[in-house]
Image 1: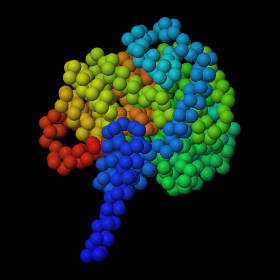
Image 2 (image 1 turned 180 degrees about the horizontal axis):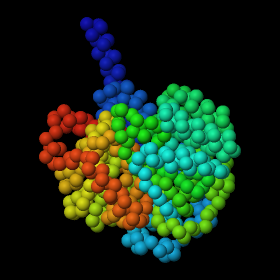
Image 3 (image 1 turned 45 degrees about the vertical axis):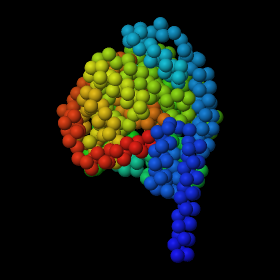
Image 4 (image 1 turned 135 degrees about the horizontal axis):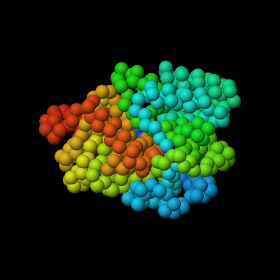
Length: 484
């Protein structure tokens, strides 16, 4: 009897402690209500352990102060530099006929994130990893002054070794090289890989490292950007990281279908500026930005209008998310989206539903191979709501679809690193190119339609006939989707 009473007492204490921890989350957590409820649910189902998971993946600790300071400093430096770049000049001096139709979107990006509109750009779209890295390696091999590299993932495999050896060769030729990688994304990469690069004189830093060894207290805040800038003349930006799977050499994923850009023109300076601001945050260097960004004269031979928009925990506004939303709301005819993860917030989901119900041609393509199982089923759950509203949804069957693109009315488009999910909108550091050009937009639509040949359409009948097990997986994943 005594032992039974004692056991009951310990259960009471355990329950009481868990309640206190839940209350602490309620008072500490000042994000969306849905995110807070998701953490509460996890802590109810997994007492104590759920709170530990919250500390690792959901807490803010010093994040707000740290990122507010970074955001203020970045904004000050960027504005100061861009004032020399005809910053915030009237759009009337440009010739792009799309400016009048999308002036609101351009202005919003300018005001919310100081994203300068430039019109003297040229781009090449890549959807195949082998073709892309052949081009990147060629550009690196021709570098004369500096190479700036920022990736979420750099693997020590076949591609990673070729990448490393080429960079060491260029360093030995006197080219200034700096590599910025994400500590969580490149967690499996052995330290020896980066030591070899450092030994060759290459400067390296990992973004927002944990101050406690082996414990990633801020694993939530990931630098998901993929940037490569060479001599300030050419930049690469998009979905591809550095690893063999991005060449389609991973048996689990098969062919890797992604979208990446090669950019020439004034936007290269703006991409380079974002890299330098990230480098400054990671290293605390007092960089003289003007040394790396000598403001170029406009190149009249290039005619593509573009804005480079970044967002992250240091942003005052979720700039990429808001730009996606503005694009959706501006659509008159069509919206084509490719994304590996589709977990939008309620506002974006509602905007897409209204577009479908308004008779617009709304098409979304997602992969049929999951790389994160809960994210996959949460994606399936959200897609179901759009299918019910008339959206045409396709599942890519030829391998893994990792592209992050949106095209509206075959006039404007966005290509970059941000997925259509809450993580990309609010937690990750992302960067996208917003392109105001019919030729580029029509190319993306043509690529989308080519990909349809490698897809199955997820019709209302197929979706409604899914098994009870799949419905259960979707329900659980949807409940925790705000924290995925």
